[in-house]
Image 1 (cartoon, rainbow, N blue to C red):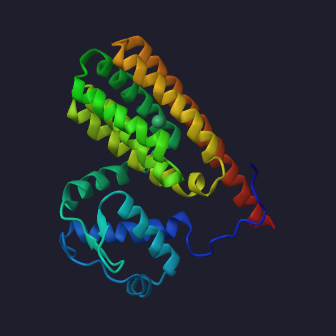
Image 2: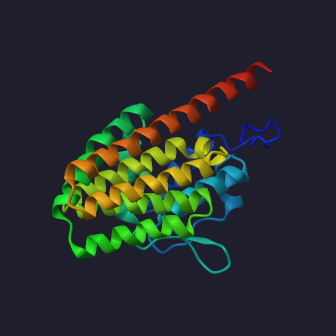
Image 3: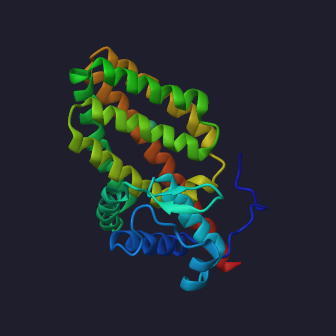
Length: 252
Ligand SMILES: [Zn+2]
């Protein structure tokens, strides 16, 4: 596992460009230019209109799809999801969060999610355990790609927050994760580190799950804290590596 010098560089898909495209499409959904259920303009048309490369548009569409803002219809075209509006609100909130440092966002996650895990241990129902167990299972058996892994990871964290019995907590956890996903997307998903990330994450999720089921509030909180601190350290290391690689490119 190393940073391969042969990794192809994407010339027009810098985070900035696809973010601009994603934000523009989100804005169009938010202001009603693209109402729920309508077709998203073709990739080539969006690229022309915004003066960006098609790969940036593709990346933006992929992100919006993974968030459920748009869905793929038959024939491969995208349309705006029927339930898009609540998500758009969440997006606006999280785009304000974007001005905040990644480490601060992770720190906030730890504050919120360790408490959520503790309360989930005290308050969970049988249905909560089933949801947690399903989320855990999809990570162990179905998470073959970084995207699937990330989605399964999200499901588990949301399930923990829901098991705390406070829906506001679940929303906050979701918004924080979407924001972090945006920030880290390019760096994490282009890195080869996801195999290690996967096995450590599964082990840590199992520890969180077992403490919750055992109604061990302190144990659940400690297990969540341990998991999030490792994930934070790993993400920061990858971001630093990406940043120094970029510097190297600029001076080459
Ligand atoms: Zn996790």
